[in-house]
Image 1: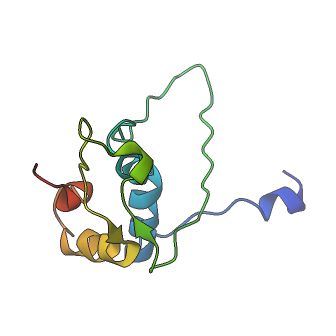
Image 2: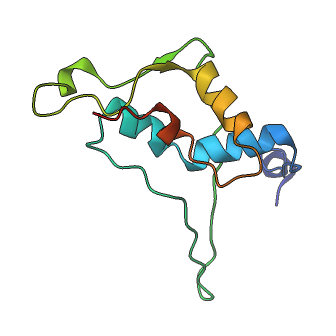
Length: 115
């Protein structure tokens, strides 16, 4: 691999911060499910290996600003489709994520409305 390509590849140590990134990135659908008011369903990340084909992974690191409000889009809420989740700041998502440390995380469920 040429040196300029090696510079683009790196590994991450399993620190608390990388676990947050990995959870948020692998469960990116959480935000989309909340924004779409449940019309788009997030799924748990699964990897299926194939002994005949090489697996390629790409990590893209981006996160909303901590003050960003995440909630159902108003255009997708009506009498037949009441909001399924309350709006929340991304900082609340991160607080809930850390609160659930050591458990099977169900962060999205912490913001569900029970109509």
